[in-house]
Image 1 (cartoon, rainbow, N blue to C red):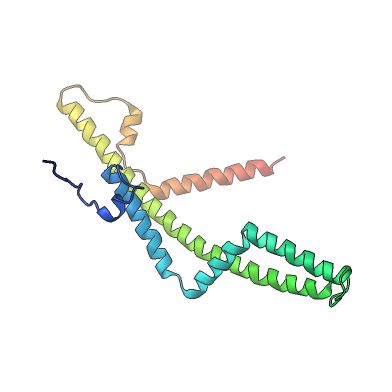
Image 2: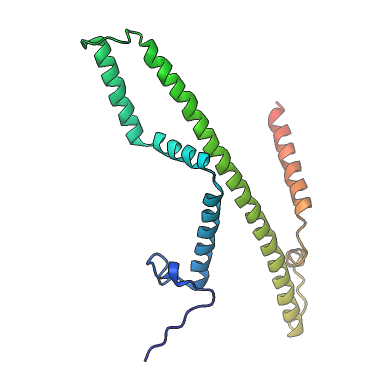
Length: 192
């Protein structure tokens, strides 16, 4: 008789679909969390955001290019060698239509990029928070290992680098150091 044991927090909906089947529980859990975050971001989008994304996605496809090649070819062909000349060379009407299309397409692309930029900023803040928490946890783990080392009578570690690693990293000081180094680098590249 076999028993079906499921890992803590495991949701069979995503784990049994094949893509996550056989993955360790912690890996599939993080994949599911990312999927939930992305789903939430899609739900926050308004109808105009969806339209802008659809138009941006379509205008960035090869189908869009081929449709324009055909459209321009037929337009020019009809007006140069065809029997129906409704837009004489240099094709002023075609130029106006393409200019209007370019204005609207660039606006749709900007709308999509602004939304994606907000999502990227949100992800960067989450990354920063996770990195800061991880740094605190690792610092604590190093201190605990040093305590165990000392408790076992193996002597105190005299490694200066290890002693520095046991101290909490001050993010504000790190930012100031990076800004100072960047300012020095910029100043040195400007000097002859």
